[in-house]
Image 1 (tube, rainbow, N blue to C red):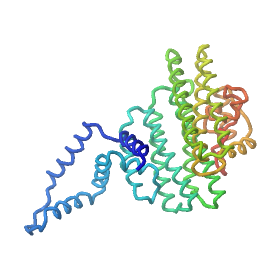
Image 2: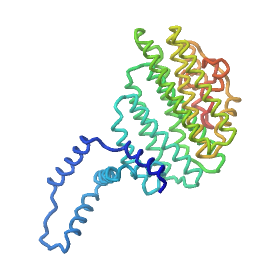
Image 3: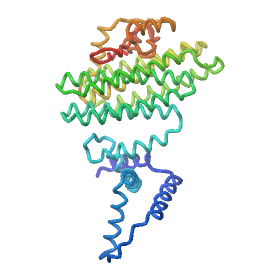
Image 4: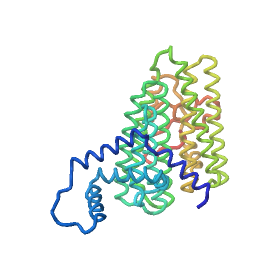
Length: 392
């Protein structure tokens, strides 16, 4: 086996290992259950102790909670190798239950803050969409799979909504929600393109759920604006700027790692959108230095939305082999530009267009490049019957 590959497996395994305290708790729970639920003695002699031990194991494992626990024990004992192998699995694959029933719940348990919990739950919701798109491209998207993935998406999206609402920092809550709305809108357009290109369907129920949750997150972002104490506004904006900078670094790494899978046009578009996000963050820092905290927060929020959209399109272009970035250009040419400046203006725009949030929080990097501030750009239209536009 290639030594570099072995190093990657070991590194992946380190991420899912339990702490000594958690292992002791798990071991104690198992032993307590075994002591309290002894196997009934039948008086029939057992030919081999190994057969008896195997029967006992299968008796306990033949229960849903025990199967999950057994999978977790296998992950721990394998040093994370199986967890690493399960990451890229799809519904129907052998290791997929390990992915969704063990490794993902473990990471959910380890998320400590509302922000971290919401981000991880949204990542899981996005994974279910990715799986639906990949299965559709492969011609393996069955109706039963559609129901399972839609239910899983809804569960993760609801958890993300609840965790986002629990975030105490208004600026972080608004940015988090607007970013999620952007990602979901982009994912919906990707699914629409997959359906049209491959002559398959990723199920209207899933896309309807995605559109509805995009509106829900945009509503949180819109309703959060103006909250918070002025005394903390500078610090809140600075924290938001740090998150925008980290997101830019993550997007740059994604583009770099996907370079060999992107065609020339997609690679160029990705770099252009990354530059737009970087310029928005730089504008935010400039406004923050001039004590314009509200303007800085909006710019950082726009940068976060730009990188969220960029990540979805880069992933789709690299893994699904579709012209994801050209979808944004096509959508942008058919959407009316608007940028309400006041909360009253926002409500009027939402009433007129069905928009779920603040325009500058969920607008297109193409529009952002016109003025570098994130204003004067297009509103998403979650009510669109043909898929949400990508010019977010």
